[in-house]
Length: 220
Length: 97
Image 1 (cartoon, each protein chain N blue to C red):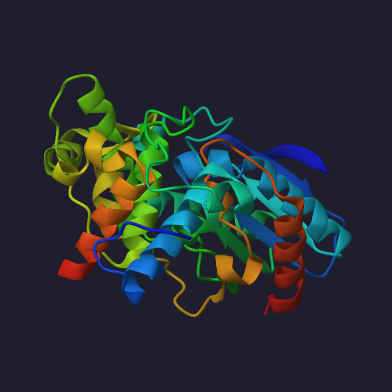
Image 2 (image 1 turned 180 degrees about the horizontal axis):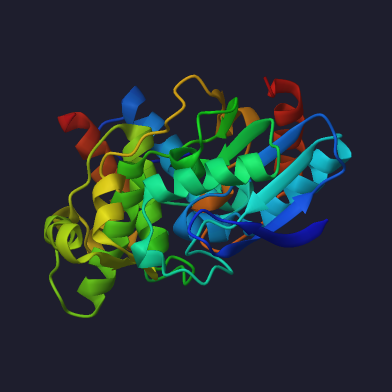
């Protein structure tokens, strides 16, 4: 496994984790967004190890504004992330895109896509807004999702610890994967419960084995 | 297992199954632990791992799998207090459609 930097279109270098042995199949891997990306962190890296064993190169670049990135998250947009991932795909000479959950929303459709349990923008936003309402209630404030959203569209919002700007809030309200002909791997195909649902970040070797096998088999 | 559902319809048994499944996915509990849940088994407030983000994820997943909409006003301590309480709420929501 190697770590390195790649030049994002914003002009900043961003961090990447990769397995590169110059093999025929080179997968740009897009992690889940926000809290789900964190929950799936260990699982995602374990998936890469298994793809490596299966003879597939993979690259996991940071989305600008996330993980090790120095760019401010609240200035990012889904369109900007998709553009950044298009650059990353070129930079790493990717042949395929594998997107996990919300990663499918920023996956460039310029390459064949595989989406694992893709999540829509509205569904991600709904869960984060609901959590925010519950936190506010515990603190004695009676926010509603509608009010939060209205405020979010003009001022942005702090959701589940992530500072999301107004543009991205508006994008999330509508966002669907750009690639509508992607090969889809559902959680039912992998078996067990999706690890992004877990309260604590977790790992399940059996699920990682199964998902890697499905990806190796279904990469178009 | 014995239940105290208002009506033992196919749909309410299905709701029971889906609720157990989603709880198992969210809490990472074994099938045995999940099978042991009784109507008066405590949920929110009894399971320290169920914080706000987890409850939000749980409710959103239940909405998707049961094809219902849960309003913020519906969510209170009582509805989340016990397994049976949450199940009755969901069965009711599905009946309305």
